Image (cartoon, rainbow, N blue to C red):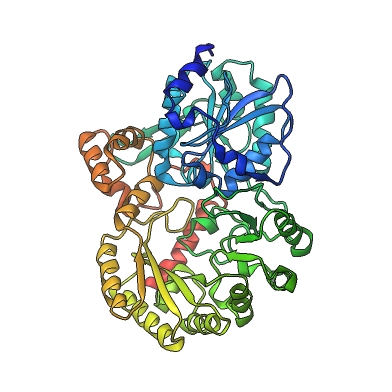
Length: 555
């Protein structure tokens, strides 16, 4: 890489990026970065959003700490609004992608560093651009042309395997580096796979490696250890000010059939409360009094009562405690009382629907009485508010199911008068590696959201719908293939509205399928999916069995 690289990159960055941000000086680290060796590999690790957002991502924190603890790497962090001093000749540039539309910032940052946005245009002097995170692990294909390689799965072992393998080849040319790295389990090199289509606007015909030396399938890597993640940095500049986060569980035993957070992250893992979680919390309490317990189903940890009793001790009366979404039938008066005393005003439960039939279809093992009892217990324990998560447009849903959601909310209000109720509601979006990946978005969902808004607000219940249009964009990206890369580059300059995406589709007419193909069409289980060469936690045959079980209820 020429010496002018760094000077040009620096001068093309926004003015706010030219100086190391004061944000970094507010950080309190819970690990000790190592001193890099003289021949350490210069690496940039980026989050494609503001520092405030990125530093609140537990995944980003943990990966950064893992990299910064290696003496064979020299790591600089990069955000859209600030950065640490960047290396003159970076060899690796990594992105953690947690939010689909942040791809726009990835392309902008690449351009700011004078790196071609498409991997095919990069040369030997450019860094290898790698990515990871939930968006890329689920379905990397819409972004495949922007990355040299993608890490599929949990970073605990995969990250070390990647760096160790890279050290063996970092003096090779770019082509050889990528071919060798593609042999590492969990490392996906998109350029080494050829995609053919039935026709330019049709479904995928085949996905093949370029030759027999490249694995036909890349399997997501799963960390099976019994110690999960905890914050590596606490700062007042985070979106959740001064919070120390502890991952209490990974995945979820419920396996709701639409849920990426459950299916993609299997199996359900629960660290020991006494050997792992409590010591982690104690480390956090040395630097802050705000603790966040994270996980898709925190209260289903088998030792959650032990954790609750520990946090309920009088010694921790000045601690603020936050818990991610709580399993409905675990909301006890004791839980509510403990949270209330720890400065929590409300809890969140995911109920999806007021319809018993619909909850059976999606495998949500709840009945309405359990939901009502959770509200009664929340109020009895001193909580002031209860937020419920719902969904419309779920496969098999009828209008009568939506009406039952209104009836359920009324029943909760009657059973727990004075408890402030909020229903947050999204539209079903198909996600890769779940049993419902073959379904499209139901256009009737838009009217159903409006019905709920009218029916609930007249009852004094706060209704907060997620944008239907955002769900359309989300579905497009979650089911997209590589033909979307040109569309994403176009849309980036038009804006992130559905109208912008429709405009881009119109401009590219004849070069890729229509929007409806990706978003609204139901796909055949015989169809080759954009991610068919990427193996998730469960094989496709198992997902089809779960799909069949759901459909047997809906008919």
